[in-house]
Image (cartoon, rainbow, N blue to C red):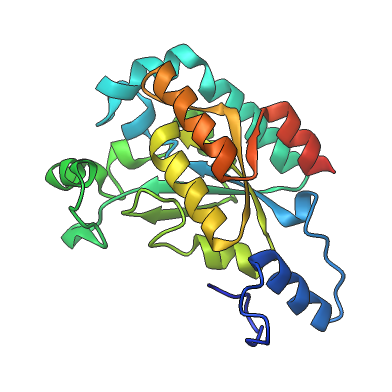
Length: 234
């Protein structure tokens, strides 16, 4: 398990990320609550043209359902409100640099992306965050990777630990792809993970609802944006 900076391994190898961060801060004479905005981040996954917009690589599958769902406006409102009360914002982008980076073509999804990797170059139009999120991303932490989980193959976990953040609220598209993969991954790493259920969506409602049902059991739970915001405020 990854540990917080400057925290030596002790006699409790099974301690969680939250406990490790708290022990480190207490050792430095700090009293840091692991609830409320200071200990929370919004993890905004794949809000990119390639995923969200009709002209993007996955537009044929996701563009229309995303537009119909109204998820973009709800997510913008939630991100704005959460940031205004002190939560950190982290955006992840799926990109493929020259020579492929850490892309592994071991699934149909990754093979499809690998075959069209020019569309996913970091500077390609489709790899950019959608205009609705652009202002929010200014000053936020933006991390690229070549993995389905937003916590794999990038610096996001270290970035969160460096700030003693142990709770994350996940938004993004698609519910059954990057959202579910990231939420399960974060939970296994020891983070407390909530999925913001009205700020995620999928290609169809049945898939979306099935994924949320899974996540209700495998994470800290699914919350509406209003419930998540109230929890962040403490």
